[in-house]
Length: 509
Image (cartoon, rainbow, N blue to C red):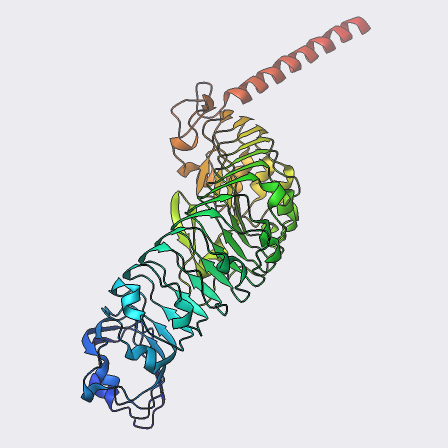
């Protein structure tokens, strides 16, 4: 098929040796995509050297070991590629020809690249718009003038390496995606990143050793949509400068050292879908401004020092009522970095379409008081409700049984009292349930999925009885003490009424 220009066989199960001889005969091929198959063995890019019209080559994520050196005269590349994708190809070195012969996109993630960054790119001037060398073994510092080496970059992903030192002062102001997460960078976030990158859509600096304030008041990132700064040592208050970033979809600043009254600094961000501030030192009331972010999907304010009542306006958040139309697509194409959230007892990384399954509220490990507002029992869209380790009190509302999509309900370590509402057995999706260490009493419901919950769900409630606990209810597993007392009271009252009627009849006679 010597006239073939486009061949895309990606994401199949082709296996065996790579078809080098076949490929070398496709003299008119312009786009060749064989990624995500099961081809095996070692190949050299010399196979493609004489394909003079080749513009796009993607053989990533097979079981190949690709040799990228093309230095011999017989192997000098005659093509000028627009895109080269060699992700997961056991590539060990980047050669200068890549920056002269590739004009747009270079994807080299999940390889075995080693050594310092500067030795690979010193004195290089490249027209690349996308450079992804994430998840390798590169180390050392980044050059201060990296923008001079890559002046056309729109997408730079260096995440998952071992880079250290301070972040460069200068990146190209045309960058739309900058991901430096999962490295060993230290020091403060440079002012140039905070203020002079008006095109930036995605900023990922998580899992480093960054310190200092997040953003000064005069910062401006008007087009920012995804902000990932979690697991650093950043301090100060919540950056009110983000009030200028009205297009924000995700804010993940968990596990830092932020403090101050959250309600004083948190702006209203109308397009925000995910807000994760877990593991900081925020204090004061839960911000009522949350109720104005009507498309909020996931709210995680756990492990802070927040106090006061849960706002009774939570049912203003339309998405929590189950009426949101935009449940997927939060992360930009090509980004593999999601965010960390405790789901079903495990710390997991969520990314891409999986975000559509995360709809909920986690305000555990604070000092919240008062009762669960009745408005919270109207949030039929949420899957997660975690209010554990607070000072909440009152009876558990029976109307929680209306939350038909609820998968996780954690009310443990509070001051709830009374019986467990039987309506909770009507939650068809409930998988994790915990009411341990409260002041609950009476019989544990045993219908439906409640027959699957173990002792740990009920510990620390000495007046609870019935399965799965070993404490029987009033001598049997059928009648809880609280109900027995109620039946006894009714019997006494009924007997008293009969005696009264008897004396009335005698008097009339």
